[in-house]
Length: 378
Image 1: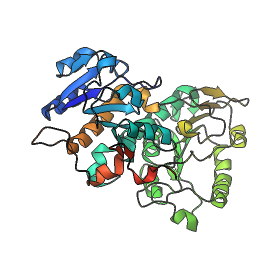
Image 2: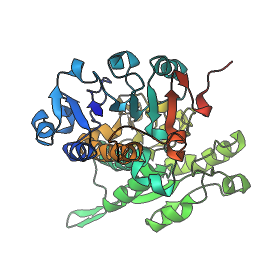
Image 3: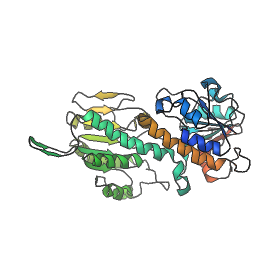
Image 4: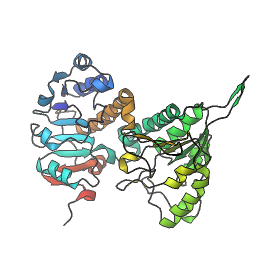
């Protein structure tokens, strides 16, 4: 069994899908591991470390030749996988929503594509949950980015020259990223408030020492899916929540938005009018900018300053700004999932196609799109 780790082709991607630690363990499962030269450069992993772990380092163009399994961070162009074995498995963040042509191309290439972001949130899959491992780091980094752009201290300081007031931080969306943002902002000394449409998050927010803010009506009580994700709220609820948060945002120094709905554009939470109401020097960090953004004025890949002096941070790939750490966690997620797909007897790739983890993540197989949520439209 040959496992290939190619160079990421997305220019914003600094992460890598394997580390020397996971390479050793993959070899222990009976695999031959091939890593593209320079694949770990942006994550601080030189080729020599991969070689010391037992991997074979080859030129990028030769990496996937004869591969049975390909590990990547982002979905690769299937044309770059043409030299892999027929039926080869590709494990990556596939971004399948709205990308029907890409899925059709994977199917036509005879590849078995597994979308790591579709991993179900059940107990046995926690160690494989790439959304959680990467969002946790994104929430942390968002606060660091905000602190860097803010230009003032976060904690209250009592000094001989006078008192420095604590920064006020507002976290919008309390998933994994939001909770880590709350914890990080609190560690830095900010006064933190947070909001989310899911009622279960109120207790989580308060347990971290922050104050919860939401319109707690009947719709709010039903605003969570069985899988723990946020539902899309009605226009009426969104209007009520916007009215509540508008006055609150005007008093904040830092706002971090993390709200995402699987398969849909990011909900607009901060309007231009809300930005206009904020004080000069305030900072907004939009973690949803790659999905359209939670802030109306956010620009993907840019830090913009509005006429009233508010900075809006729209960095792409926030986890990639912590490439060494995010690569380490992502590689472990892949290893944990791959371990369930490899036969311990034959040392070959032999998944149980009826396993709930496989059914949840498998997009294409045997020349067809097989995931029920992404069937081609008639």
